[in-house]
Image (cartoon, rainbow, N blue to C red; front, top):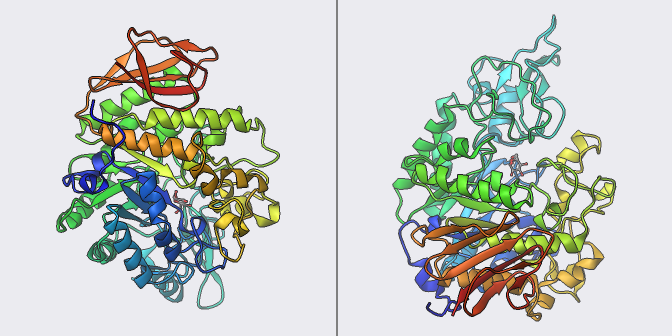
Length: 563
Ligand code: GLC
């Protein structure tokens, strides 16, 4: 085996065709990454300043959550102008500088596109409010008459993903209550009407705006939501299904077949550009089989594998979801993706030790049942990541997981900002706990996140020990583990489907496989130590926890070769 530790970033970034098939893509949540201005909210110059840290981490690309003009009612997923940078985050020139600096380091850049809804401050929505029912301005959104004798009831029974009704009534020009508009999320996020060709035209323009600037692709927000079933029939969600998924039956606002035509259209727009630009779908769907429909050859390039993210820490379930992913995606000619954390879910260093159900978006707080034990969570998170990074396909990392950050649980009520918290009267904590600004320097104001010491969400005091500078100096840290795993993954080309994967039957509690000729991977999810069933001299290449000889402790993943 060639030296596994030498990473040639330049060569990797020039691999050229279809870089996204095996890429490690790091999600930056701009408001919590790094603040250069001192206002307590991260910004684009802050990203530029830290790119060398990401290069050292060894990622191929970054995806930035929205930084476009927005009143920030849903942390930027409420866009008021798709073609400008919000002053909170900087300027378009700052974006161009960041993009150039990333490309100079061989790091590709994906931006977030939010096509299901805009902000209520978007000029189109303001025009719609000012215009009359039935006007062309209203036809760009989902305005409907209410039910009841005076239109006082919403047009149907749909609920917002964030809680409460999915409809809000407007006041018409004559000062009286009038039509209702649909918002699958917050009332400040009106849904576009994608049966209207002007909406298609506008989004082609937005795509080209960013493609012309040189972005490498788009992460497409709520990609499964754009089309709604004709007639907008009532629908009562299955209480056991995740808020964004729904059960296997048809949900009239998720995964409607007409939505695929939109992405076929976008794929053609991307094909006008050089350099393998890519689309990645955020589509919460009930099965992998359904999600794979998003990545057929003429649609998106990737889709997040949320089934993988949602899989419990259980060897049989993990094996099954990995096998099903590889099968379903390869059936449509796409790579699988893998993801364990993002800005909408409980961080996996806490989630994997939760003993109670936690549907997507609900978060955990001080009064949640089944509180995670931090040491158990971190140990499992490291083992889970080491397994994930050994798999073929593209892997998504969420900022801070390389520091082993847990969910911030003790956020004071008055500091919480997620609309979910407000729309459910505090019944659901929401997603603030995974969005707390990163600790960079243990011994600095706001742990180095902001020069002024400000932080838009409070950082737990114990995060000093998670700070990047502390971890850079500690061989056993989670950061050093991530750097090492990514270096070996790159050197051994583990992301590539052409490097064979063979399953090994090493017992019910062990997920074991071989990649290529010589690299073995074993994750022990059992409660007892596990002796590697191999002959010869075992050389551990990477390990999520210390390994003694050939015995692998509980909640540990090892990568090894036999010399
Ligand atoms: C997506 C985003 C989430 C946002 C929602 C509405 O799920 O990931 O953060 O709140 O869409 O745009």
